[in-house]
Image 1 (cartoon, rainbow, N blue to C red):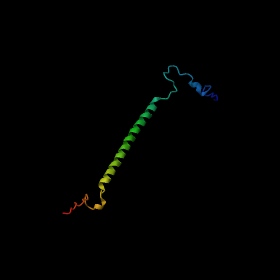
Image 2 (cartoon, rainbow, N blue to C red):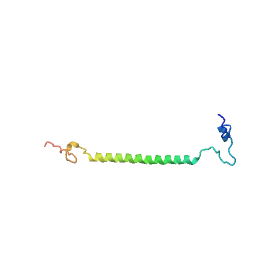
Image 3 (cartoon, rainbow, N blue to C red):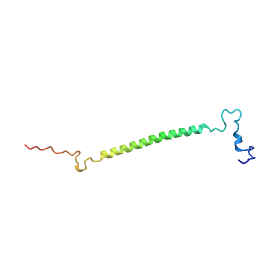
Image 4 (spheres, helix red, strand yellow):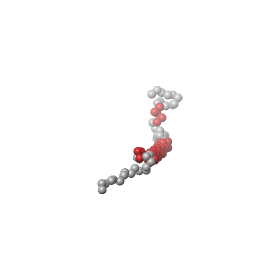
Length: 92
């Protein structure tokens, strides 16, 4: 790497050679709060999407059941609720 005199370091990595005194963790570690917030957001989104899809599926099932119930099961029967067969005629 090229020397950067304005930074006061021989290379960009010189700043990270030592952990500052009094530090209980490495000062270059990522903060955990944004990571935890992201994971919580992912879990909340997954739950909302799960229940949204379950609700949409149930709605479509109910619409399908209602549509089947409103259609006549025997379209050739005319106005009869259920077509009845004539009773058998036996020869006497």
